[in-house]
Image (tube, rainbow, N blue to C red; front, side):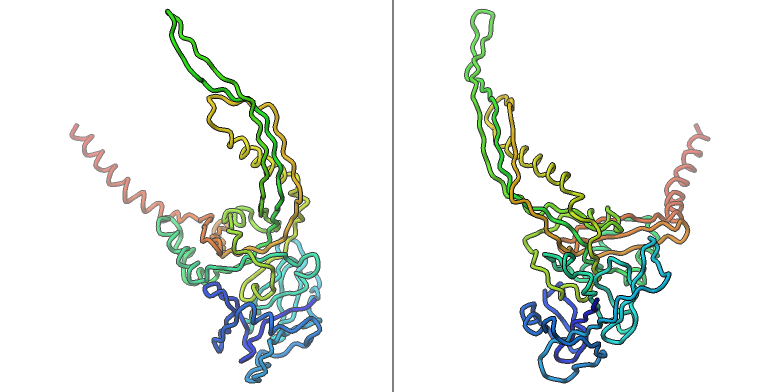
Length: 377
């Protein structure tokens, strides 16, 4: 199993995907490359299998994209497990040779020593290679701005949750999702009633109703019904930032992961088949029924929905995350921001000291006033 770093052809520094420009930037010489240029420069699978050092290629002027790799990576340290009981795995950084310890689902990370982004290629090979990726559109600075703006009205959050040291831990992560698409053929038969006229004869009011037979047929294209594909992630974290705007989705390329964390799926789409199909049928049926209007009353006699060309796709979606462990309770709190739309969700810790001070500031003076008024009354 190989590790990959995307090297700048000008100086050999690590390339990272920049959400603001949607291009790849070198943090050392500030060179910029488009996705098309990266694909042209990227060597094929028969390329260099060695693990060059961080300075390899510097000043070479050859224009070749360097990808450091090592086939010796992927060994499992004896007896080492992560907090969930899963075996941790050790990889070797192709830039500096340092060992990188990850869990079994991490697909992209950073080298702790040289800080180069590292993509664990074997994690996304074969059946685990994503079909699509939705690139980050918000960079770290924008995610930080959204985070601080979100906290403005949260008065009782401990200062340590949004300290500079804590904010620096904010991480861009590509989370795995399954998306379902299909075509739906719908058929509806109903009876509609319209009041045509009303009149009074003597002391009696008469109403004439007309009845209509209603038939509706329609076809609907359903695209990208999304489900979380990672067990270990907090469902509220990865689902609370949905939906994503799928108009920006692109065919998967490993380069988009450079500079970010990434996780591979550990849930297969078979777990969602029945649930998603029922959701699609229900949505299609309600949409078809909603097309029947202009009647005072509608009675549906029969309704049918048929799904065809159903297909699942595996996609990676962008999320900025920040986690916080409360020192007293040991509970984990988090902030998550959709890396494309900026939608926010989170679970915040409570600073009981701030809450007590607020109570004292507001209610103690009020209590004193009431006591004085009560005394004179």
